[in-house]
Length: 451
Image (tube, rainbow, N blue to C red; front, side, top):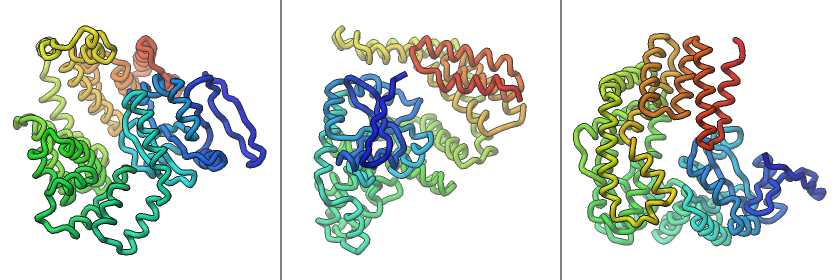
């Protein structure tokens, strides 16, 4: 446990708590209101690391970058730093307010709580330092997004204003669907596909239910290999996710089917799709839709059929043979790499995954369906069916996460002793892997409490 040092700021009459680190980033601990007050006191923007407990890159950034002296020097000099879990307490509202959809997300926020800059993911220590430099530069812009929005709402529509406004929104990771639509109205249709406009659309597209998305989808093959094309593909994938979130919120089944068709076209840009692959993608999207819209009957119908007829029919032995064949292909494709790369940590992790890639994927899908049954269903028949899928996932990949699912299903079925034993095994394995078993220990404590 890190010791905490309490510094009393008499002029403001409130407590400021920081992690006591000799090197690395010093993080403020307290409420969001308190961190903004501290930022005002120091006259610095706030760096916010929005993470989740299950996010691998989040853990890597926390372990590798935040203790680093160079990162500490940069961040401590220019920001008040703050960490918050997107799925707990104030983190839930902050993630919603700033439209956080991927983890880790680094937010750089003004002392008034306005977004200055955002970065998604973790690109190593140098990448994080580069993002910090961009945020420092962005903070020098005296015109806030709120001021741009006010001008737009007042009716300002000249192309130069809209172009600059779109770039500002893109920099901040703010959806630009309506602004893009307005921009296209100011430009003749014959100019929509000029290099300059395609670059603008590629950087700003944020909704799959937009003219800009359709234009980029049509032009994507011609942009293949270019920086604009790569940017377009990345942002179109996020735009699809944004639109999926919207149709789920509206419980819009017709909207879902339109997005499934667009997702298939976008996916086909990466590789040829067989009918089976298209069917699989569509099924996964529909299952996710019915699960999140809390329609257990439709979800159960799709999930049970998929689990029994697509996943469970693949025996562990058949999957192991696929693993071996896949790993041989991986070895052949990577044979040109020097030994120095092959001995690296990242390559070793990839190689370890490829040795059981097919089995792991099937296990993960079975586990996800079993966990959804645990969360949404109560009848013993359905839970026992899910227990069978969970058991198979353990045969294929006995990971702590899959053990945890199996334990929860046992507990919900009234098999408390077996549940506790399995959960204890999950905790022991998580510790062996060098991970924090806290969430599994909390679940175990609840299982041990007498009804």
